[in-house]
Every structure is written in structure tokens, then in C-alpha cells.
Image 1 (tube, helix red, strand yellow):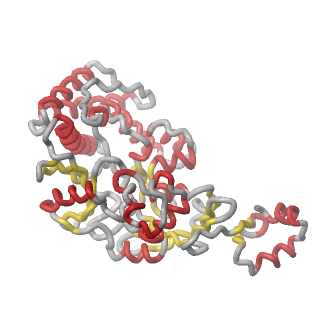
Image 2 (cartoon, one colour; image 1 turned 120 degrees about the vertical axis):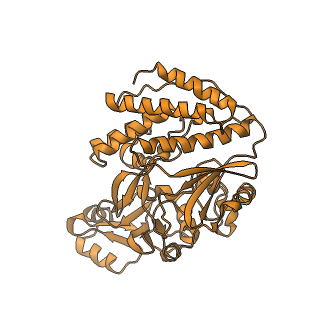
Image 3 (cartoon, rainbow, N blue to C red; image 1 turned 90 degrees about the horizontal axis):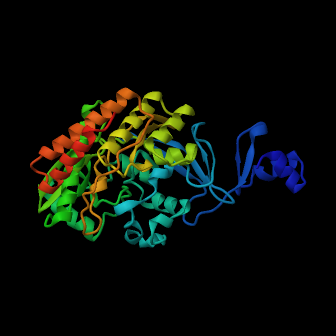
Length: 413
């Protein structure tokens, strides 16, 4: 509330207001002169009245700003001008710290002492902060909450160092117990580790023994191939490789928000940007073009997002939700597109114990330039041709790939 509104509400003068709040720790005063605003501080049990948000880089950190809970709900963040302000929930640049997916849903059980709701999907911003302040070190990107987490992050207190030989046992443990402390998103079974010092995220198939498990293995191989294809087109893509061990297929993806030297790189998802600045949630292309119109992202970023959206549609990636595309984020600035990840023909993922081979719908995107549309179509045709010829992929999915390639041969780019 601004000063004159508060004075009118309380029936007091500006000078009386100033004296009343000058030594009142229950009132948060932000801004100066006519832009001064006042808010009542809100307590979150077990947390300080304001929390330091740190940005961790190469084994060092700096404080990005201070986050203060306020009444009636939400927070105030004081930091870089582009980020400073009042928020009804966690600030958009902290959205991706929310636990979710296969690994995130284990957290309530792994930290019962926090007394948090048993389903992370229903955690409020207060719940998320309680966990982040207690154990939020292994989180995406470079932001952490509190000095303890910042110190641990700089000291490399993250995923354990393992070798490839450990992958089968790590997969078994992930399925049985989960990995405490992580909030990597996505429902595909996975674990985080440092393989010979390299930070990686590892997805894995079931033990391959039937058609559904073989299909999951096929899609992990296809994902590695799709990421390679994207990189060959001049886009940044996560580096991935396929391994087999213990009857499973593993897809090891090097984390682009980490580096082997212990550094971190900031990221922010398109989902977070859409929620704060656009509010449509339609597609990569739609949101990026709205962000471009607001001059929040560069024209080249919007063009590349559209190409990737179209390529994904042509390879049957029906999981192109806004959480699966990210931007670099550094000291409050939105940068270039982050490397592409989770690019695979999700249309063909098994539903329970059944495998479906029906064709995926061809895209109807029209925002791409003719040259980019032809390029995305050509890359998708090359992808399906390579999958159809890959002898490590099951015969049934090679047939699907060949048919997909034939359908694209008649598509107009």
C-alpha cells in the first residue's frame, strides 16, 4: 500500500506514519519518496522474516536479492530492478525450483521432519521455501535459497560421483527409494549423478523383456538421435549417449545447467516466462512470439523456438509443453535459448502395458518462414530415415519410423 492510501485508511498524517513504521520490524518499507510502499510482514514457521536468494556460479556465489513474505499473501523481492516487486506467489524466476515429476514426488517422504503435504503438486510457495531453505541444493539452474545452501552448492555438495557400472544399481534404487534432495522434473524414471566427474541426468528403460519395455528403450535411442539431429542443424542441444547394462537401456544426458568444474548456469523455463508475462500456455511458438513482441527475448530466439516446435511436431513429439524449453538466465536477464532437451517421439510412448503405432498428427504451424519450415521438415525426414535404419532399434519401431518418413515425404514444408 502506498503512503497516502495508508494514511487515509488509518486517519493519520504522513509524519505520524513515518514515526510509526521507522522502528517497526513487522512492517516492510520499500521504495523511496512518493514510490514508497508499505506491507505487513508475514511469518512462515521455521523461516527467517527475509530469505537471501543466491546465484551460484563457478564455485562462488553472490546474493541476487532478498525475498520477504508479506500479507495477505505472496512475497516481495528486492534485487535487480527488473526483478524487484511484489508477487502473489513465488517470483517467476524461482518457478523452476518447485519440486515435480518422478524425483520430486519423493521429497515429502524423504523429509518427514518438515511436515510438508504428501503430494508436491499441492505445495504452496511457503512449502517450497521451507524445503529449499532446508535441503534445496540439487535444484535446476543457479538459484538457491539461504546461505547454507549456497555454501553447500559452492562446495559441490550435489549428486554422488559414480561410474557407468553403477547405473543398473542406481536405477533399481531410483525405482525403490528415489533420490532425496532432487527436484528434477518429468515422469520418466531417472536419476542424477556425476559420472566420472561429469554432471548427468540418466533416464532408463524397464528391463527389456516385452513390447512395451522395448518401446521405451527404442524411444531413449530415438531421443539421442533427435538431439544429434538438432545439433547438426546448428542449434544447441543437450549432449546425450546411449548405454546398455543389466538388461536396461540408459540415456545419459549431460546437464547444461552444470559443468564438470563445479559451476552452475542459470536457466528459466518458457513455462515460467509464460505464466508471468504472457498467460496463454499454447505452444513454444506462440509464447516466444508474444515475448518477442514485448522485447523480452531476441528475434533469433523466437525464430529458433519456432523451428524446434515444428521439428518436434514432425517427429511426433507430443510432449512439447512449456516446461520443456528454457532460456539462459543470468543476474536477472533472460538470455539465449538453452540447449534443447526431451526431444523424442513421445506420441509412441506406451500407455500402461499397451503399445500404439497409429500415426501422429501432422503439424499445422504457420509462423515459420518458408525456409525454416523446409529445413525442419527435411531434418525430420532425415531423423525418421535414420531411425528406420538403426539396427539397435526394434523391428516394430523401425517399421513405424519408415511409415512416418513416407508420410512426411508428401508433406509440404
